[in-house]
Image (cartoon, rainbow, N blue to C red; front, top):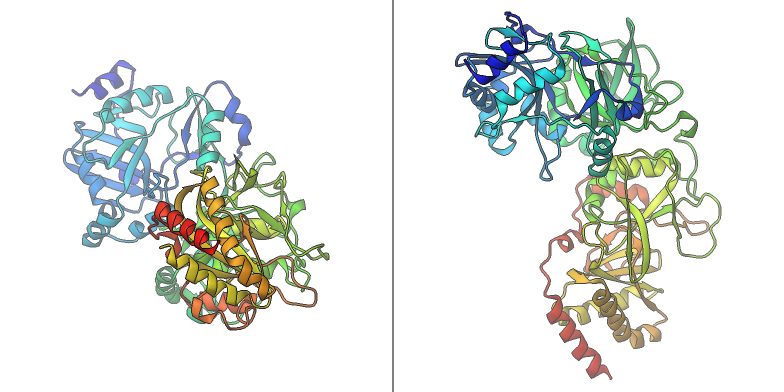
Amino acid sequence: MTPAEHLAIELGAPLGDRDGSKLVPMLCGRDETGERVLAHVGWLFELKLDGVRIVADKRGSHVSLAYRRLRDATDSYPEIAEALAELDEEHVVLDGEVVAFDDDGKPDFQRLGSRIHVRGAGARRVARSVPVVYVVFDVLVVGGRDVTGLAIEARKRILERILVPAPSSGSIRLQPTFDDGKALFQQCRARGLEGVVAKRTGSIYRPDDRSTDWVKVKCELDADLVVVGWTEGEGKRASLGALDIAAYDGDRLVLRGSVGSGLDDDQIDELLERLRPLEVPKPVAEGKPTRVKRGRHFTKPELVVSVRYLGTSSEGTLRHPVFRGVRDDLAPEDCILPVVAASERELPRRRATSPSVVVLSDGTTKGALCSYYEAVGPSMLPHLRGRICPLVRGDAQPARGRTAVPAWPLPEWTPSWVRTCVARGEHGELRGVVVEDVDTLRFLVEAGYASLLTTPVRESAPATSDFVALRLEGDAAWRIALHAREIIAATGLSPFVKGASSAALDVLVPLGEAPAEAGAALGMLLARLLAPTAEGLGVTVEPIRALVAPYAVVVPVPSGGKASASLPRAWEELAADLGAEAGLDRVAARQGQGAPDPMLAMLSMPVRFADAVRALEALVARAG
């Protein structure tokens, strides 16, 4: 008899058996109480995991894994089945989630998606590049004892005897519990995690029941929707531009909008392969599409997908949804859009504005701006990740002066997953957002920010600068930029250039991780060397620390002009008209077609900063 079985007997668990392959797990209740439950006495708290629910049944050496809707999952996660087979228990039924973790140790549902659909030998191949972990939070049967009727605290004690120490394979992990729900939730917000699950102490396990003894408190909004059609797109996404998605309201299937953001080429191919056999001639869901698009196809409501979103409109459609992955573990009838409590972090409906609202003085609307950032997001995000980015509002009203002024603070209804950062240094206080995904870019547009700036300051190293930038302004700015390239190259550094406006350029020089004051001094030295030639051509040269981010919109828009983007440039194209290719439509089309990024190498370039400073000081000395 194992220690776990002995404890189950000691705690009064009756004889009994349950077949894990035929058991629908207990679910969180729908009447969520928001963050108030985090301060309640008599609850324990766990991390909400971004994975798929799995009930595992081990009998001797035989192990079966089942999704929440009883579909077999054993062949999809062979490493977990093998690890469970090594447990000392002759018979055990466990409840938990299979999770794939990203490089930072956070659950990543999109990464897990490549495992959900693969079985057998294919699953073993994919497992080498996408390992998964079975995070176990409950036990239902141990030995010949049914422990579902024991209090959750008792079941946790039994589970510890089963999984402590953890199996050596690393494929199974015990889900820890916490007493301080508020502190745990704050950590979730800080690290961008899903949220917290609160469980009432003394509660029993209720299979196939949605009980308010378990309550979710989420840091973001997500939902599972059933696909009821798709629309064709443009360019590389001509075959599939967006999915039409719906949810059940009682017996009615109601359209909840469409989702295109977050889809990549491989996902599009896979979705089309699965959707084409489901195509039907007429719509199966009630409601009209939010936008009339060409090439709309209708399908049977069989494929379930997960999306993240910023809230719902007054008509019930999802605002700014982002595709996260296919949910083969769920049935279409599970797709019921949750009613979010007032204390949740949804953007209040009274804050929502129409996509047709004009945000730039040339008539660019909020919807157009969202579409632009979706298109350039893959090119833009590498330049933003981990960096503190000040925000700039739109200029539908005439702006004074030529320089956009950073705006702060964020509105009170900002979602908790939007990461803000404040750094203090010799140049004063820097406040901004750390942008990690397109979802954050869409929120910024919703909140009235048309653009954002980039800085040489990273969240992880606020006292250093990883680049120095010079603003060159004037009709001959491109000539001074080429001159700057020659001087900078003589120091052993490698400069890069991007547009700043129709008559201005930014020259950026990667520094590695130089002290902030050293980076500022280097910028001053470069400006000093360039000044004599620049003045003769009517060009101003100024070191700057906050500049329009690559691919971000240039604000304000010139009077009578059209909105443009800060487009990275190849050195050989500088003699061309700076604004010729920087219009939002052209930049979006260019990046959507996979145009190369001339600044991408800047993010990983090795730098010998001390040698460069000595070489530059010698140049300044010779220049007198």
